[in-house]
Amino acid sequence: MPRFTRIRRPWRNWDITALRRNLGVYVHIPFCPAICSYCDFLKFGPRRPKGLDEASYEATLMSEIKARGAWLTQLLAGSGRRVDSIFIGGGTPTMLPARDLARLADALLQSFPTAGGPVEFSCEANPDTLDREKISTMHDSGITRLSVGIQSSNDRLLKFMGRTHRWRETLPVLEQIAMGPISNYSFDLIYGLPNQSSANVANAARDLLAFRPPHISAYWIVAEPHTAYLRWTRQFPRQIPSDQRVLRQQHDVECFLRGYGHYRYEINSYALPGWECHHNIRYWQGGDYIGLGIGAASRIGKTVVNNAKSHVVWHSSIDGIGGPRDALLEAALLVDPQAAAPPADAFLRMRNRLGPERSGMAIKPGWITDGLMDIHEGRLEVSSRGLNLSEQYALEMDS
Ligand code: SF4
Image 1: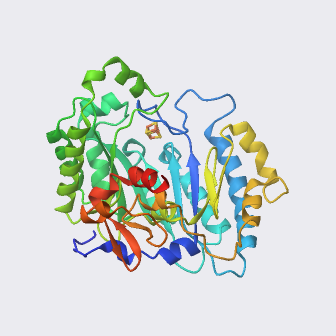
Image 2: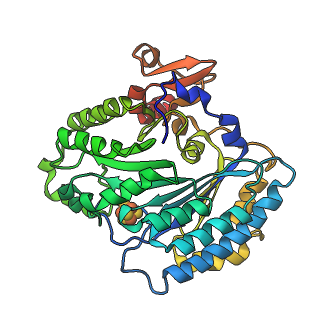
């Protein structure tokens, strides 16, 4: 169990050089037991496109892992660069049986150039698809971090969101997670829901913290296009809480978590110092990553390439990996694959506490004097209050 240690400005300990020198791998598992009302991810509930099932998806994924892993190993040979973070997301990856997750983990660790140091290996999970045996198998197969979608400890709200678990049934799973053997785990929390009181948000944070997670992701619910939640908000607009009310809830969550040693290191992320998700920091700081599975994004240098969203098109693309029509090969030709990735654009880096280099940036004096950001060793550092304004900075910097 991680210890509570207060460290001043923990983001100054992030190893940005390693995050940009090494690479991450993201794997998308698009299956879910049901569809949540607010979800706009690429996922499928019980009704799926013809020909798409777990077995065929996993078979194609294994082929992609082997082909892309061999390609990347060759590309990076002799560079000293390696893969040091893997993230299996979705969807609900833990819908797969334990032995399939183990096979997947093994193929990833064997096929990609991971040797030479530790690998942060995360897997997203829903509590009703986890049990002791699965956690133990995941741990034995190299998975080092769990990210669990709890969202609330209130059954009325869980039902409203379309979640398949209920709080009381979740408790034994949370106890199991807290007992290990995977000591690095994160719980998701959602606030800003209609008819969700501030007390309810605080209760959910308290209920989750009883299991001592070293990391919490807390999200302000957003009515995304084409979701049931958006349709609901259009039908009942007066039930949507005001921004001021939700900002208060966000502030309360932050204060509460701070009392447990967590600091806010990104718009939606809180962690004990040293327990931040390095894979996600890599996204915001500009590191390279390879995406596997339908719709998964990869970034090499400044080029982002997306896999096809159709499983049929994705399946037929696997044979072309490393060939003349491989978009990722084209992206790799634009940069020196032996060299570290360039820094991300300012907007992305403003999402977390360690912002971009100050030189050449138009900084408005008020941003510093109002305590929204600071400058340390030529670099911007964004305060927690400043994180809420990162979009605004980007717009004003460009104008
Ligand atoms: S479990 Fe996650 S990915 Fe699946 S529908 Fe719900 S929010 Fe979306």
